[in-house]
Image (cartoon, rainbow over all chains, first blue to last red; front, side):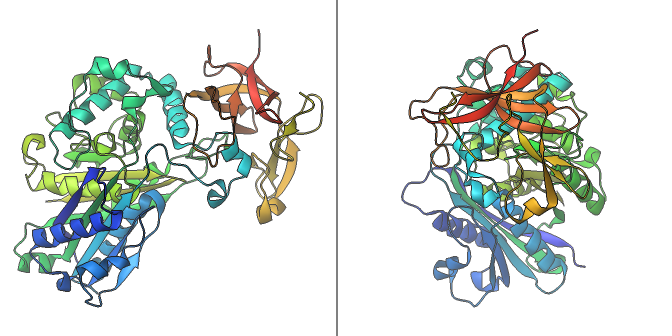
Amino acid sequence: MSDVCIVGIGIHPFGRTEGRSGRDQGVFAVRQALADAGIEWADVQIGYGGSAAAGAADIMVNELGLTGVPIVNVSNGCATGGSALGSAYSAIASGEYDIGMAVGFDKHPRGAFNADPASYGLPEWYGETGLMITTQFFATKIQRYMALHGISPITLGRVAEKAFENGTNCEHAWRRSPVDLETIMAAPMINDPLNKYMFCSPAEGAVALILASEKKARELGKTPIRLKTSTMRTRPPGSFEVFAPSINVERGLSPTQLASKAAFERAGVGPEDIDVAQLQDTESGAEIMHMAENGFCKDGEQEAWLAEGRTRVNGQFPINTDGGCLACGEPIGASGLRQVYENVVQLLGRGGARQVPGNPKTAYTHVYGAPGVSAVTIMER
Amino acid sequence: MTSLTPIAHDLWTNEDPPRLIGGRRHADGEIVFPYPGGDAAANYEAIGLSRTGTLWSWTIQTFRPKSPPYDGPEVFEPFALGYVELPGEVIVETRLTQATGLKIGMPVELVIVPFDATRSTYAFKPVEN
């Protein structure tokens, strides 16, 4: 097995770009990633990519060039980007290809996602009565977590405050101005205990990554950022997921716990070895719960961690250094790859005002989505 | 309220008072709600679930959900919802009849409530001590 390196990264700014399709944003990101890698489109031997709501990736060859390159369209909900990256990783690791691409892009209408019950194997009444809403899941999950583990509402506010602060220093973020804690805490409630500053919004954006074998990375003269693992897991028995009309009274692990454990094992490192992490923060509570589910702290410790500023860019364990989903919004197909993009930025020391100090060497990403999937990557400089 | 039509068939029993209908999997006894449709139904036995339980978690729906799939009245009234643990059976997602004074662990019981002008749905209501 060859080591797999990320040798080029590209991003189309997240947010709203009127008049540019999601796929065109993807093409924009691919061109930037190719330039960053110092290669031509014709050098790419295999591609994986897709979106949740903006069409297929293979049509991009119209703009990028008809080189005959195989492109595999990936459609895996919130794990679309993670699945594309995992596939590209395997293609390079197998030794069959030297240079591959993973791309994710999306463009969603405003407002909460409206899901179709039938496509999730659920009865119509579940959607008709207003129970099939992603924000409700996150609210009920954190509501119970707060009661069990002593997390107070202001800790939710601190996560949002940090996100907007980091987004202010990030070129690709959507929300680029700070919001003070008092304003955050006074905002109208969306789904109790989460208010309007504590949820991310569906958005637009695209990310492309160029992967190469270690040998090829050296030929290109690139600082090799090694992708140690790209691991995805679906839900185990007794987990609590988005769109669940019922859950098992015998409580079990989460898909995030499975993916995290497997990723650490494959990478041969532990949570204590990670210098910077991008964790799924579709809302403030998600970041808090995912800190523990990924093994970075014990349940309940988040209260002190946030109060002490440990997860800020200059803290002991920076989380979501580009503002995460809260500041960048969530274009589903691109969101997981944005996390990887940001980690490469941090490992190469390109973060500017949001650069994690102390020369970070090991970085972690985590994405979670319906109906219970989680993907984790670990990378090293 | 008897004039209202249930939002779906076989969601609760015709008993008075009614019970939600769940499915007990033949293979391992795991209980799910609602009773599964399609080919999966063959793997489950329909059972009436406990009318009482405890509040497992809750939230308030403050905005009108997108239509489709939401099919409630055009004039939106915020409503409470959550999960109720039916002891030893299953934890079910449900509307709650009140939006204040909700506390995890509080006892609740099943009631049938109006959904719109013509249809009813199920909800859980805090039990007065």
